[in-house]
Image (cartoon, rainbow, N blue to C red):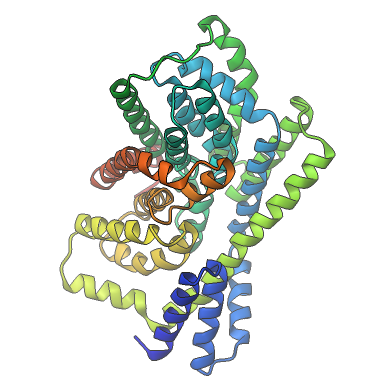
Length: 431
């Protein structure tokens, strides 16, 4: 490792530790490498432009962000919640189950854990605390845990970013996330049921089964979005990026004309907020393009691959080791940085060990999402604390059982690749 790279890493982590936005830390750290290496600083601009020109798929990111914000701004979230309450709210710990099922459904529309937590999650926390059956900390914890499902079931912004750095099929990644997302939902509901029985939660006020068809009918147009997205991709009608545009247009038409819940003023606010969120992600992506050039220039991925091959490590041992590493990084780094900067280091080794890139990518994204609720940094914990004012220590105290359940699901995905790969193989993925 060269002195210039050490300076780059030192500047990056020093700025991050000082509280600077991670995008600025990456950009300044990368520029410090170019400066100390006596390279032309314009190289930074050329790497960003080259990455953007070759990354048409990146257009899907702002489109998915916009779709999620439109869903939150309209009455779509409310209709989905009423359907979830009617379907699973009748059991002990019912609103906890509603929380998880709502996240499962909303994940098929947003592709963002933060959008899930700050949008429909805020509403479910209010429902749980108003019922008087759940502590604010418990309501916030299960909301944070269920929001991790958002980027696993398609559409998924992190999987789009992983496809960018790995060249893996976005369609296969989207399909590969469906069963893992359902598994995550099931283990969270099982843990909620166990805690509800242990603490003897009262049964919440239920909606009669006779009203379930009406609520299902009201929610049905919103439930069609993931189906439209996947049909567009696998029916050969659209590319993944075009499917993101279609999904966004569908969300807009649904909220504005079908449900009539979106005014011009609200739409303007949605566009502004979506532009800000997209710009924040874009800064990280731009910095990652430069940093990835630096890492490739230093030959770090090939050195890692050669070193691991010399150890004669098995694919399973490699997957477990890398996932433990990502899990530790998830405590201090955000998912976008891990996917764009850290994961590319291991891709040559995956190829050498014949590890399917779709399996590796889905498992890595699940791992990054678990990092979002892992103390001390877990960004979702801070998001929910910010939007609800529930004390952070209360949320952290209640998050541990759900964190353990999700880690068990992650370990199962590592041990049994078919959890990820069965569905893509049914659609012709050759991994």
